[in-house]
Image 1: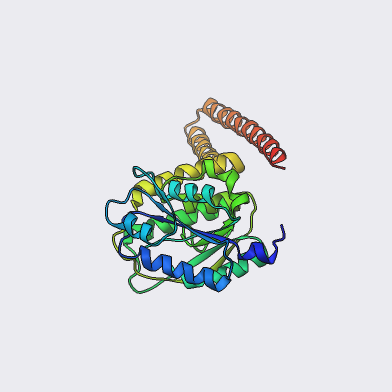
Image 2: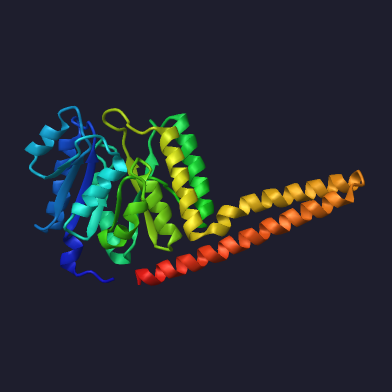
Length: 299
């Protein structure tokens, strides 16, 4: 899909906020500077306030930008979804309002996006403050699982600074996570449907305010999405670990049975493994057929 120069400069910057009174105004100013540099009056900034209880909403209103406000907390991902649906431009940029992401890096990411027609993600370069041991551990685990699922190198699983097309993401929105795992699920969905995802290194600053991420809860939700995505797009990879486990178990049982001269157990174990393999084969065939029908409808 080729974009005209005018379309390339028409952007919608979506910023989900939750109790970000200390940094939201500075973030809006930085985004306006980016829009001024691009030079298109049709560009917009959309703030989605996820029921903040501090002075965030009032400060956003005073900044005179487009505002969507939730009456109760609905989640980071749901805030982004609402902003994406409301956006009037096709080029969507998402970022946070906590001072962590360098807004000034957006033009560089945008240039790559326009040239390659891909989702472009800011790959965070952690500074000395780093992150907690728990978050770092969960991030490494998720990265390993997603790289296994996608067969791709994933430098940053859940960076919140990224650019993509509204038209391309809309079909995925209903299945993406409503929580902080939204960006992870988006990465997985794009890669498993063979969309090009580019990464550009960016600085990552210490956040202003308190984090709202719940590592264990959000990681479990992400794992749930990974299983659903594998079942939909690559069921063989989902079932392969089970198959390997059962095959190994069958071999162990056979060896033990032969050792103690109980031969009929060998046949039971072998029959059980062959039956399970047949079931796996049927599931894979059915899922691939279902996926082909889905892709045909999308065309």
